[in-house]
Image (cartoon, rainbow over all chains, first blue to last red; front, side, top):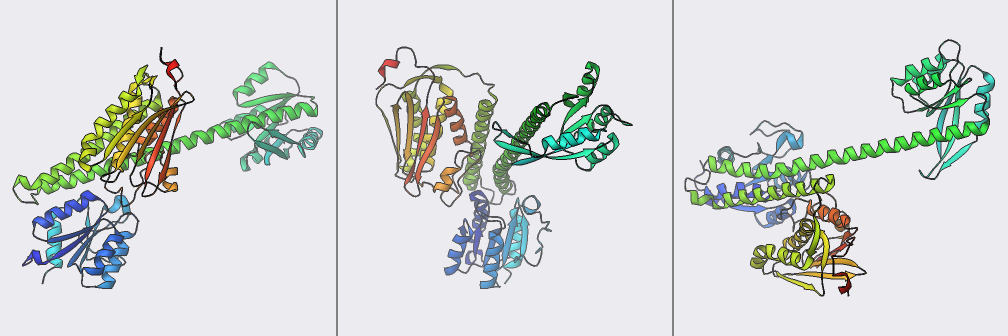
Length: 132
Length: 384
């Protein structure tokens, strides 16, 4: 488990207000410091001054590839920042991911989770990725 | 210029050559379809050869002799009638027997040409067949387009209804898993958002019902005298609870009498949509001006806001079904994307229309023009 969540900042990027809320609420309740962005552009802006300890990105935002591109940018900037991709899997992408696995190598993610998100699972992934 | 392919099936070489000579270089014009047509003529000396040619690539118009050696014209018709080729058949008969005509028509022949015929008769028959063929194709194409629009509508609708379900599902999981702890007080925002998304879903379903009723024409319009000022006042009152906390002032100006003969429910839908949009897409502390006016007997409703406005490209597609302008400002505003398409349909019921003038970042003004067929009793003379 993470020794002190309050020292950890998580960036949450999703264009759907409710999905952001569904990540932010439990993460905040678990003690994390959450920064949210409704889109790729806003996230890039935030990343100029902030280095999050972990990023959770929706794969499909306003542009089909916004999540991919953002994940790629984060990794390019700092490969040590863990990235979790959230996706509505097959119904939207046509790609089949095994939950929790990293998927095809061209997706820059340390974990891929399918909607609907179960917080316990997310928390486990975060704990695994933030193990210090 | 469109070229139609004609196939002449006749055992008499003279007849085949004559038809070819008449139609080659002949062109017709169908102004009702806005099209000019010429012909490309192919020929076959037997039914068997004709059938082979049809199977290889069906012509648009088939000139088919009834009496052929071997396979008869009727046999050929029989063979091709199952295949549902997109062609029109003109039977050529040496003796116009009623019986043959009935059988041939049953098997799909469109017209008859009795031998001997003069070039003008041939041209007239071919013209009639060409027109019928093209009209039929046009009708089919329209039906197909309508089908596609319908499919698209259903697919977007399904997607729009799925979105709130997904959101609510996520919140319910948070509750069931007690992801915010065991204190119910921690879930205030969760239940609030569920209710908001459910409300959005309900509005969409109600809009959808309005739209279906309008389109099917099943709902009887209840025409009677309606005071548009009163309808506008009610719409304004309805949105006050959302407008007031955001400091949005709504003003109504109406000089004169605005009674008309109409369906009150329809007019409420129009004003509710326009006024609630003007609040929804406004800035905090903004204004909404609702103005009723008369112009040459038409009633004009203008609803102006000081909101986010739109680009000309966005304005242009605004009145279609499920059109929602998606950008940073509208991202968190909910709507079915059906409201304005409903307003447009209703305006058209009153021989009117709806339009928008908008400037990005400044605001939008929606104008609805209604031309009710009759004036309510005793109010016509009050027109300004």
